[in-house]
Length: 110
Length: 117
Image 1: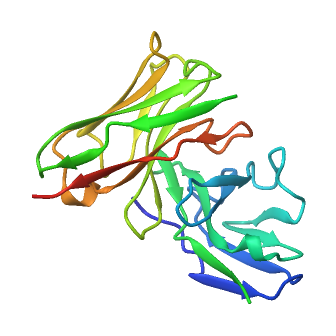
Image 2: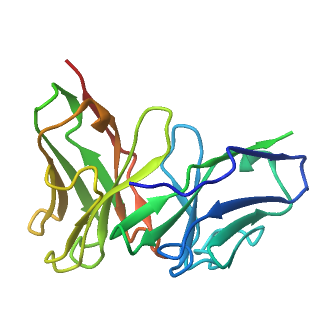
Image 3: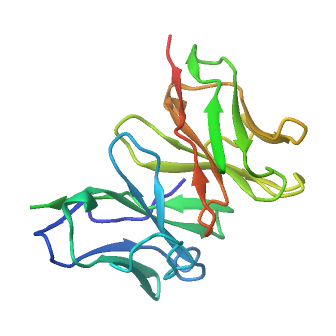
């Protein structure tokens, strides 16, 4: 099962904006909705973004998603210490007939 | 309150079998697509399998197709993952998820499967 490349790490100071990329292809990111999950240490993943740019109820608008061609991005604005976590993109891959996750990005708040 | 709780994990030898269960409460497993996702120790998330609302459509990751079977027990409101011919690389925490990537997404805390001799 292939995975979608993400930068292994990203960091910022409190209040800053951090952006995480997710690179795909025409069989996945280029043709379908992208979702983003946040995973705190030892916890189950939590959905932050679905349908590329929609937030589930309860997710603050500091988190936003976008897509351009076969690349997607998650932006975190107003960075907070409790944003320290791993972040994963995920999308349906039409060639594989299955979901593929990104490699994950660890966000550190300096 | 909606909740899913996984069980059935444990230590098994390579080539062995294991049956995971995901007990749902607060909703019916027949009203959502249900999924299994796994995470090897210290590694990233990997989607494993899904089953649709009526139980007639299933999909699997290439790495488990032909060895794992997803199903539902509607009477017990439970999602099941039958795992056969287990390999060392199947070692992971297995999560059950309702409405994966949807607005009503809900995950359990996972159950650990260890494949080792």
